[in-house]
View 1 (cartoon, rainbow, N blue to C red):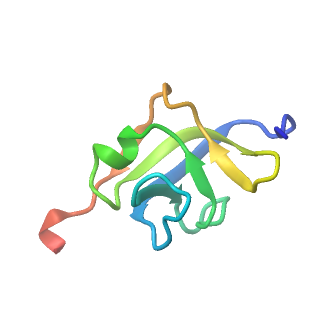
View 2 (cartoon, rainbow, N blue to C red):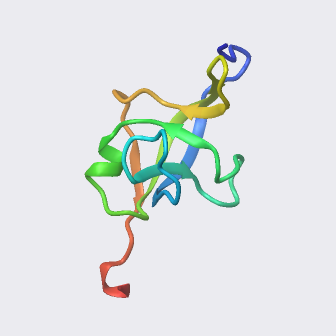
Length: 95
């Protein structure tokens, strides 16, 4: 069931390596950043480029909305076609 009452807003997210990948596509995923409007355990459906073309820990700003699937939980959705802004990349010298 969609959530038509929810509107789109700017959301800051980041890439991370998922501990549990059962039922998920790949090891690197996107989640809301800590301290934002959404909990960090919320999944984000977005462009695969965000997890494949940038290093883990990169932060992005996306135009997204909270939605859900019938029989599933809530998640943030943004079209894979929409532009996203790169806010920061992890410092490679810190490794």
